[in-house]
Image (cartoon, rainbow over all chains, first blue to last red; front, side):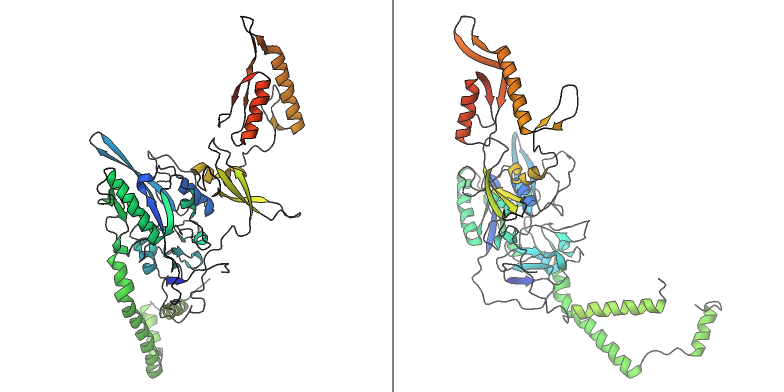
Length: 300
Length: 197
């Protein structure tokens, strides 16, 4: 793919090549979603569709503000609305769902297609559709249940953190559009600093459990949340309290991968040696006749 | 296509062998790491500053279009997003503003004056000259008929209450001032835009 700009790749799915490691200047980027400032207007959803040339089919009202009800191959970000009742009090929690761009991406670990999922040095995890084989392993590997397989082309799709914009020095479309500055974008360091200020402010307003959601179980994320109830992330439409990559992914892609590759290599070598020492099986006339008898006298 | 059992076994074995060789890392090294970032789609697109037409906030937008406005290139809007230099929104937009590309390309968008003649149920396209003449004629007729120069007490009021004027919100202060002056000059009181002039 010819591009006018590029980013170094940190990790590449199902590949054993060593990516370039010398250039260290790349700034790790992050998107900070301040849930306490979000008004649920869905400008981010709209801007995402517009930038990525996506069209979400018109759906049906299902008794919720969520629209569509969940992430789809064409809606890479969706506002999730949760109503929490505490006595007479109603708390309305609104979370922008989408790819978290994990530092240790479960999708990339699970992916068997070389180069279908890449992680750039700035932390962005992107799906390269040309290399995607549509197997759906990324869906199983994702601790946040984000990738979706398109019914049209059987390829996996998710938020790219607008890597095409970030590569030319612009903010993602959702972050740019957000009218309440609930979505911030910048270096990961700056975003953590900004979050700390927001948390101090929220605590002064009585949210004692306010905190930053940057789960260590996936090595931290490049999409972080400021939550007013950081002690219970699952309140926010089931945000995982402690996301971890499924141990099965680690087992098959970690321990089992060299073992199974060795087994394949062994089978190949054994087959070759067997062929040159013993040669192929020969079928004698007697065997053929016996076979014909078993098949009821008819030759197949 | 007829496939014998032996052929089927051979093809399966060949497929398995090929994918095993792939799994062992013997292929694909050439194009590895060559994947670049998706190209930025607005590179060298023509940028035009404009104002979002939806509401009275009147956010600044940048309209990106295909072509460089050279003589043989036909421009077409390909993307719209907030104008970071506009003091009202500083690059942000609401969900409707962020989706205004669809508004530009909507098949339902009104692009020219339409006229529904008395007694028909169909709108048909008319020229701006026709539309403006028709509007002016009707306004004059209505004003001549319903203009109130003096009220019951004989005080001069110069009111024209039977027609209203609805102006755009996406206009400058100067255009708003002119709208107000011209319409109030005719005696009209019902003047409105989403922007409240």
